[in-house]
Amino acid sequence: MPDETTPDETKPPRLAQGREHVVATVTEIPPGSSKVVPIGRHGVGVYNVGGTFYAIANYCPHEGGPLCSGRARGKTIVDDSVPGDAVMVRDMEFIYCPWHQWGFELSTGTTAVKPEWSIRTYPVRVVGDDVLVTA
Ligand code: FES
Image 1 (cartoon, rainbow, N blue to C red):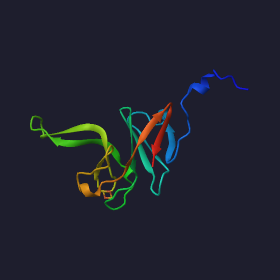
Image 2 (tube, helix red, strand yellow):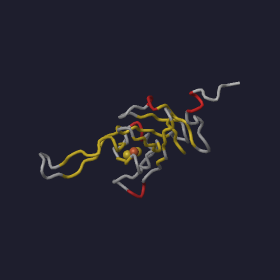
Image 3 (tube, rainbow, N blue to C red):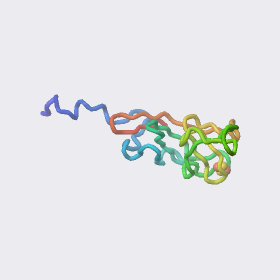
Image 4 (cartoon, helix red, strand yellow):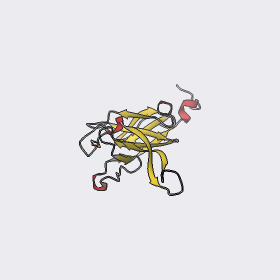
């Protein structure tokens, strides 16, 4: 019979529930990196932006490109006070489709190109060392 005070029993439950999937460990997706996991027809990209995790559909609504094969970076805004009149802000919070460079906000799935074509994002939570996505 197991000792009820063993450290393993004090850990939070590892198993996901319902439509929640354990997709990675936290160390598999360090800040500034991502992983495409096999959920749904096209997969879901899971991103770690400075310790905050986001999950977004790996499908571009423009012409069906593999969105999460693109680069994550910030977005450009007007700033008249700097040379070139533009600056990059919110580094790594946007994913850009590799086909035609439409950009999508990781936290919301919205695109400034055509907001009515925004895509799905999914809740992510971290339990212990596990990253869980509900999809
Ligand atoms: S298919 Fe993604 S921008 Fe065109």
